[in-house]
Image (cartoon, rainbow, N blue to C red; front, top):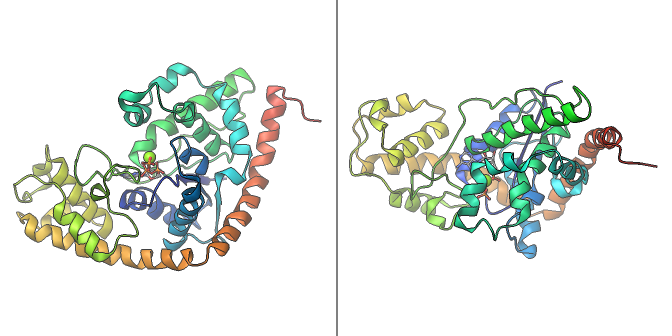
Length: 332
Ligand code: ATP
Ligand code: MG
Protein backbone atom coordinates (compact mmCIF):
# COMPACT_ATOMS: atom_id res chain seq x y z
CA UNK A 1 0.00 0.00 0.00
CA UNK A 2 1.26 3.48 -0.79
CA UNK A 3 2.39 5.27 2.34
CA UNK A 4 3.84 8.76 2.75
CA UNK A 5 6.44 9.67 5.38
CA UNK A 6 8.08 13.04 5.91
CA UNK A 7 9.45 15.13 8.76
CA UNK A 8 10.44 18.62 9.85
CA UNK A 9 13.04 19.49 12.47
CA UNK A 10 12.06 21.70 15.42
CA UNK A 11 15.32 23.61 14.96
CA UNK A 12 13.68 27.04 14.75
CA UNK A 13 10.43 28.67 13.67
CA UNK A 14 8.85 27.41 10.44
CA UNK A 15 9.71 29.35 7.29
CA UNK A 16 8.01 30.01 3.99
CA UNK A 17 10.45 27.42 2.54
CA UNK A 18 9.17 24.77 4.95
CA UNK A 19 5.60 25.67 4.05
CA UNK A 20 5.98 25.68 0.26
CA UNK A 21 8.57 22.88 0.06
CA UNK A 22 7.03 20.59 2.64
CA UNK A 23 3.86 21.30 4.64
CA UNK A 24 1.68 22.47 1.76
CA UNK A 25 2.47 19.30 -0.17
CA UNK A 26 2.02 17.07 2.88
CA UNK A 27 -1.50 18.31 3.35
CA UNK A 28 -2.23 17.81 -0.34
CA UNK A 29 -1.38 14.09 -0.06
CA UNK A 30 -3.65 13.51 2.93
CA UNK A 31 -6.65 11.32 2.16
CA UNK A 32 -5.10 10.01 -1.07
CA UNK A 33 -2.92 7.50 0.80
CA UNK A 34 -1.73 6.66 4.28
CA UNK A 35 0.23 9.66 5.59
CA UNK A 36 2.76 9.69 8.43
CA UNK A 37 4.23 13.06 9.43
CA UNK A 38 6.85 13.58 12.07
CA UNK A 39 8.43 16.38 14.07
CA UNK A 40 11.99 15.08 13.97
CA UNK A 41 13.29 16.31 17.31
CA UNK A 42 16.18 13.83 17.35
CA UNK A 43 17.45 15.35 14.11
CA UNK A 44 17.14 18.82 15.63
CA UNK A 45 19.65 18.01 18.40
CA UNK A 46 22.39 17.23 15.87
CA UNK A 47 23.13 20.92 16.47
CA UNK A 48 22.76 22.57 19.88
CA UNK A 49 19.14 23.25 20.92
CA UNK A 50 18.27 24.99 24.16
CA UNK A 51 16.40 22.31 26.16
CA UNK A 52 13.99 24.95 27.47
CA UNK A 53 13.06 25.86 23.88
CA UNK A 54 13.07 22.44 22.24
CA UNK A 55 9.72 21.18 23.55
CA UNK A 56 8.07 24.46 22.56
CA UNK A 57 9.60 24.38 19.08
CA UNK A 58 8.34 20.82 18.75
CA UNK A 59 4.84 22.05 19.57
CA UNK A 60 5.22 24.97 17.15
CA UNK A 61 6.12 22.68 14.25
CA UNK A 62 3.15 20.46 15.16
CA UNK A 63 0.95 23.58 15.25
CA UNK A 64 2.22 24.49 11.77
CA UNK A 65 1.20 21.13 10.37
CA UNK A 66 -2.21 21.32 12.05
CA UNK A 67 -2.82 24.94 11.04
CA UNK A 68 -2.03 24.14 7.40
CA UNK A 69 -4.75 21.50 7.41
CA UNK A 70 -3.22 18.29 8.73
CA UNK A 71 -6.06 16.29 10.27
CA UNK A 72 -4.95 13.89 13.04
CA UNK A 73 -7.90 11.66 12.13
CA UNK A 74 -6.50 11.24 8.59
CA UNK A 75 -2.73 11.44 9.19
CA UNK A 76 -0.41 10.13 11.87
CA UNK A 77 1.34 13.11 13.52
CA UNK A 78 3.97 12.54 16.23
CA UNK A 79 7.40 13.57 17.42
CA UNK A 80 10.25 11.22 16.63
CA UNK A 81 11.67 10.77 20.14
CA UNK A 82 8.41 9.23 21.37
CA UNK A 83 8.92 6.27 19.01
CA UNK A 84 12.16 4.62 20.12
CA UNK A 85 12.28 2.40 17.03
CA UNK A 86 13.70 5.37 15.06
CA UNK A 87 16.84 5.52 17.21
CA UNK A 88 17.15 1.73 17.28
CA UNK A 89 16.91 1.20 13.52
CA UNK A 90 19.07 4.30 13.08
CA UNK A 91 21.87 2.53 14.96
CA UNK A 92 21.61 -0.54 12.74
CA UNK A 93 21.82 1.72 9.69
CA UNK A 94 24.91 3.41 11.13
CA UNK A 95 26.42 -0.05 10.83
CA UNK A 96 25.15 -0.55 7.27
CA UNK A 97 25.94 2.86 5.74
CA UNK A 98 29.56 3.46 4.66
CA UNK A 99 31.68 6.43 5.73
CA UNK A 100 32.39 7.10 2.06
CA UNK A 101 28.69 7.57 1.37
CA UNK A 102 28.36 10.09 4.19
CA UNK A 103 31.37 11.99 2.88
CA UNK A 104 29.43 12.71 -0.31
CA UNK A 105 26.49 14.39 1.45
CA UNK A 106 26.46 18.02 0.32
CA UNK A 107 24.21 19.18 3.16
CA UNK A 108 26.78 18.03 5.73
CA UNK A 109 29.43 20.03 3.91
CA UNK A 110 27.14 23.10 3.87
CA UNK A 111 26.23 22.80 7.54
CA UNK A 112 29.68 21.93 8.83
CA UNK A 113 31.43 24.52 6.65
CA UNK A 114 35.08 24.88 7.58
CA UNK A 115 34.32 23.50 11.04
CA UNK A 116 33.93 19.79 10.21
CA UNK A 117 36.11 18.65 13.14
CA UNK A 118 33.95 20.45 15.69
CA UNK A 119 30.42 19.43 14.66
CA UNK A 120 28.61 16.54 16.35
CA UNK A 121 28.95 12.97 15.18
CA UNK A 122 25.14 12.99 14.99
CA UNK A 123 25.18 15.68 12.29
CA UNK A 124 27.43 13.45 10.19
CA UNK A 125 25.33 10.32 10.76
CA UNK A 126 21.98 12.10 10.38
CA UNK A 127 21.14 10.67 6.92
CA UNK A 128 21.26 7.13 8.40
CA UNK A 129 18.66 8.13 11.01
CA UNK A 130 16.60 9.68 8.23
CA UNK A 131 16.76 6.38 6.33
CA UNK A 132 15.41 4.68 9.46
CA UNK A 133 12.58 7.22 9.69
CA UNK A 134 11.49 6.37 6.15
CA UNK A 135 12.08 2.60 6.12
CA UNK A 136 10.40 1.93 9.48
CA UNK A 137 7.13 2.71 7.71
CA UNK A 138 8.07 1.09 4.39
CA UNK A 139 7.23 4.50 2.95
CA UNK A 140 6.74 4.63 -0.81
CA UNK A 141 6.46 8.43 -1.05
CA UNK A 142 8.72 10.95 0.64
CA UNK A 143 7.68 14.51 -0.18
CA UNK A 144 10.69 16.73 0.58
CA UNK A 145 12.27 19.90 -0.73
CA UNK A 146 15.10 19.78 -3.22
CA UNK A 147 17.72 20.02 -0.46
CA UNK A 148 16.71 16.61 0.95
CA UNK A 149 16.79 14.72 -2.35
CA UNK A 150 20.29 13.36 -1.83
CA UNK A 151 19.34 11.96 1.58
CA UNK A 152 16.31 10.22 0.14
CA UNK A 153 18.54 8.66 -2.52
CA UNK A 154 20.94 7.50 0.21
CA UNK A 155 17.99 5.77 1.91
CA UNK A 156 17.67 3.60 -1.17
CA UNK A 157 21.36 2.69 -1.03
CA UNK A 158 21.07 1.76 2.65
CA UNK A 159 18.01 -0.41 1.98
CA UNK A 160 19.79 -2.13 -0.92
CA UNK A 161 22.89 -2.88 1.15
CA UNK A 162 20.83 -4.17 4.08
CA UNK A 163 18.90 -6.47 1.74
CA UNK A 164 22.14 -7.66 0.13
CA UNK A 165 23.93 -8.27 3.44
CA UNK A 166 21.04 -9.79 5.40
CA UNK A 167 17.82 -10.60 3.58
CA UNK A 168 16.80 -9.93 0.02
CA UNK A 169 13.68 -7.85 -0.52
CA UNK A 170 13.24 -6.98 3.17
CA UNK A 171 13.26 -3.21 2.82
CA UNK A 172 11.42 -1.83 -0.21
CA UNK A 173 13.56 -0.19 -2.87
CA UNK A 174 10.70 1.86 -4.20
CA UNK A 175 11.96 5.01 -5.84
CA UNK A 176 10.71 7.64 -3.40
CA UNK A 177 8.50 10.01 -5.32
CA UNK A 178 9.35 13.64 -4.94
CA UNK A 179 5.94 14.99 -5.91
CA UNK A 180 5.71 17.94 -8.25
CA UNK A 181 8.62 20.24 -9.01
CA UNK A 182 11.26 19.85 -6.29
CA UNK A 183 10.93 23.16 -4.52
CA UNK A 184 13.85 25.24 -3.33
CA UNK A 185 13.01 28.62 -1.84
CA UNK A 186 16.14 30.74 -1.60
CA UNK A 187 17.45 33.07 1.09
CA UNK A 188 16.15 36.66 0.66
CA UNK A 189 19.63 38.15 1.22
CA UNK A 190 21.56 35.70 -0.98
CA UNK A 191 19.81 34.00 -3.88
CA UNK A 192 22.44 31.26 -4.07
CA UNK A 193 21.68 29.90 -0.56
CA UNK A 194 18.47 28.21 0.51
CA UNK A 195 16.10 29.79 3.02
CA UNK A 196 16.53 27.92 6.35
CA UNK A 197 14.90 28.24 9.73
CA UNK A 198 18.32 27.99 11.35
CA UNK A 199 19.96 30.65 9.11
CA UNK A 200 21.86 33.44 10.86
CA UNK A 201 19.74 36.48 10.08
CA UNK A 202 16.00 36.83 10.49
CA UNK A 203 15.93 39.14 7.43
CA UNK A 204 16.91 36.27 5.13
CA UNK A 205 13.68 34.32 5.71
CA UNK A 206 9.93 34.75 6.03
CA UNK A 207 8.71 33.02 9.20
CA UNK A 208 5.24 31.50 9.32
CA UNK A 209 4.59 33.65 12.39
CA UNK A 210 5.72 36.99 10.85
CA UNK A 211 3.02 39.66 10.79
CA UNK A 212 2.06 41.72 7.73
CA UNK A 213 4.50 44.56 8.51
CA UNK A 214 7.43 42.19 8.93
CA UNK A 215 6.62 40.36 5.71
CA UNK A 216 6.35 43.64 3.77
CA UNK A 217 9.62 44.88 5.26
CA UNK A 218 11.50 41.68 4.48
CA UNK A 219 10.39 41.60 0.85
CA UNK A 220 11.12 45.32 0.49
CA UNK A 221 14.67 44.75 1.76
CA UNK A 222 15.12 41.51 -0.19
CA UNK A 223 18.24 41.62 -2.34
CA UNK A 224 17.66 42.03 -6.09
CA UNK A 225 19.66 43.22 -9.06
CA UNK A 226 18.78 46.67 -10.42
CA UNK A 227 17.03 45.37 -13.57
CA UNK A 228 13.23 45.21 -13.70
CA UNK A 229 11.42 41.89 -14.26
CA UNK A 230 12.09 40.44 -17.73
CA UNK A 231 9.45 40.05 -20.45
CA UNK A 232 9.83 36.23 -20.47
CA UNK A 233 11.09 33.61 -17.98
CA UNK A 234 14.22 33.04 -20.06
CA UNK A 235 15.23 36.52 -18.90
CA UNK A 236 15.59 35.17 -15.33
CA UNK A 237 18.70 33.20 -16.29
CA UNK A 238 21.68 34.26 -14.19
CA UNK A 239 19.44 36.33 -11.86
CA UNK A 240 19.01 34.10 -8.78
CA UNK A 241 17.32 36.74 -6.56
CA UNK A 242 14.83 37.78 -9.25
CA UNK A 243 14.07 34.15 -10.04
CA UNK A 244 13.49 33.37 -6.37
CA UNK A 245 10.93 36.17 -5.91
CA UNK A 246 9.10 35.11 -9.07
CA UNK A 247 9.10 31.48 -7.93
CA UNK A 248 7.79 32.41 -4.48
CA UNK A 249 4.97 34.35 -6.13
CA UNK A 250 4.26 31.39 -8.42
CA UNK A 251 4.19 28.84 -5.59
CA UNK A 252 1.97 31.00 -3.36
CA UNK A 253 -0.53 31.66 -6.14
CA UNK A 254 -0.39 28.17 -7.72
CA UNK A 255 0.68 29.80 -10.99
CA UNK A 256 3.61 28.90 -13.22
CA UNK A 257 6.59 31.30 -13.28
CA UNK A 258 5.69 31.94 -16.95
CA UNK A 259 2.23 33.13 -15.92
CA UNK A 260 3.69 35.37 -13.19
CA UNK A 261 6.04 37.03 -15.67
CA UNK A 262 3.17 37.39 -18.14
CA UNK A 263 1.16 39.18 -15.42
CA UNK A 264 4.05 41.58 -14.58
CA UNK A 265 6.09 41.94 -17.79
CA UNK A 266 8.93 44.38 -17.28
CA UNK A 267 7.60 45.49 -13.87
CA UNK A 268 9.93 47.32 -11.50
CA UNK A 269 10.66 46.01 -8.00
CA UNK A 270 8.65 48.90 -6.55
CA UNK A 271 5.60 47.30 -8.14
CA UNK A 272 6.39 43.62 -7.83
CA UNK A 273 7.66 43.46 -4.23
CA UNK A 274 4.54 45.02 -2.63
CA UNK A 275 2.33 42.73 -4.75
CA UNK A 276 4.35 39.75 -3.55
CA UNK A 277 4.12 40.91 0.08
CA UNK A 278 0.33 41.30 -0.18
CA UNK A 279 0.02 37.83 -1.67
CA UNK A 280 2.22 36.30 1.05
CA UNK A 281 0.24 38.00 3.81
CA UNK A 282 -3.06 36.84 2.29
CA UNK A 283 -1.84 33.23 2.14
CA UNK A 284 0.05 33.07 5.43
CA UNK A 285 -2.11 35.12 7.82
CA UNK A 286 -4.91 32.54 8.09
CA UNK A 287 -2.32 29.83 8.82
CA UNK A 288 -0.42 31.87 11.39
CA UNK A 289 -3.70 32.76 13.13
CA UNK A 290 -4.54 29.07 13.34
CA UNK A 291 -1.03 28.29 14.62
CA UNK A 292 -1.49 30.81 17.42
CA UNK A 293 -4.81 29.22 18.29
CA UNK A 294 -3.19 25.76 18.56
CA UNK A 295 -0.23 27.15 20.54
CA UNK A 296 -2.65 28.57 23.10
CA UNK A 297 -3.47 24.98 24.12
CA UNK A 298 -0.15 23.10 24.43
CA UNK A 299 -1.78 20.22 26.33
CA UNK A 300 -3.97 19.50 23.31
CA UNK A 301 -0.93 19.45 20.99
CA UNK A 302 0.84 17.08 23.39
CA UNK A 303 -2.22 14.84 23.41
CA UNK A 304 -2.32 14.75 19.57
CA UNK A 305 1.41 13.92 19.41
CA UNK A 306 1.06 11.20 22.04
CA UNK A 307 -1.88 9.57 20.25
CA UNK A 308 0.03 9.78 16.95
CA UNK A 309 3.10 8.16 18.53
CA UNK A 310 0.98 5.22 19.63
CA UNK A 311 -0.26 4.71 16.06
CA UNK A 312 3.27 5.10 14.71
CA UNK A 313 4.63 2.47 17.12
CA UNK A 314 2.00 0.01 15.91
CA UNK A 315 3.55 0.20 12.42
CA UNK A 316 7.21 0.68 13.35
CA UNK A 317 7.72 -1.83 16.17
CA UNK A 318 6.95 -5.00 14.17
CA UNK A 319 9.31 -3.84 11.42
CA UNK A 320 12.05 -3.13 13.96
CA UNK A 321 11.56 -6.52 15.61
CA UNK A 322 11.82 -8.33 12.28
CA UNK A 323 14.98 -6.36 11.60
CA UNK A 324 16.47 -7.41 14.96
CA UNK A 325 15.70 -11.06 14.20
CA UNK A 326 17.24 -10.79 10.73
CA UNK A 327 20.41 -9.19 12.08
CA UNK A 328 20.64 -11.74 14.92
CA UNK A 329 20.06 -9.42 17.85
CA UNK A 330 18.63 -11.63 20.57
CA UNK A 331 15.18 -10.81 21.97
CA UNK A 332 13.89 -13.04 24.78
P1 ATP B 1 17.45 23.73 9.25
O1 ATP B 1 18.07 25.03 8.89
O2 ATP B 1 17.44 23.49 10.73
O3 ATP B 1 17.99 22.56 8.48
P2 ATP B 1 15.22 23.85 7.41
O4 ATP B 1 14.48 25.12 7.20
O5 ATP B 1 16.18 23.41 6.37
O6 ATP B 1 15.90 23.89 8.85
P3 ATP B 1 14.25 21.12 7.76
O7 ATP B 1 13.57 20.71 9.01
O8 ATP B 1 15.68 20.74 7.55
O9 ATP B 1 14.09 22.72 7.62
O10 ATP B 1 13.41 20.59 6.53
C1 ATP B 1 12.01 20.35 6.62
C2 ATP B 1 11.42 20.23 5.22
O11 ATP B 1 11.39 21.54 4.62
C3 ATP B 1 12.23 19.34 4.28
O12 ATP B 1 11.31 18.62 3.46
C4 ATP B 1 12.99 20.32 3.45
O13 ATP B 1 13.32 19.81 2.17
C5 ATP B 1 12.01 21.48 3.35
N1 ATP B 1 12.70 22.75 3.12
C6 ATP B 1 13.54 23.36 4.00
N2 ATP B 1 13.97 24.52 3.48
C7 ATP B 1 13.40 24.63 2.26
C8 ATP B 1 13.48 25.61 1.22
N3 ATP B 1 14.23 26.69 1.37
N4 ATP B 1 12.76 25.42 0.10
C9 ATP B 1 11.99 24.31 -0.04
N5 ATP B 1 11.88 23.35 0.89
C10 ATP B 1 12.57 23.50 2.03
MG1 MG C 1 17.35 21.63 6.67
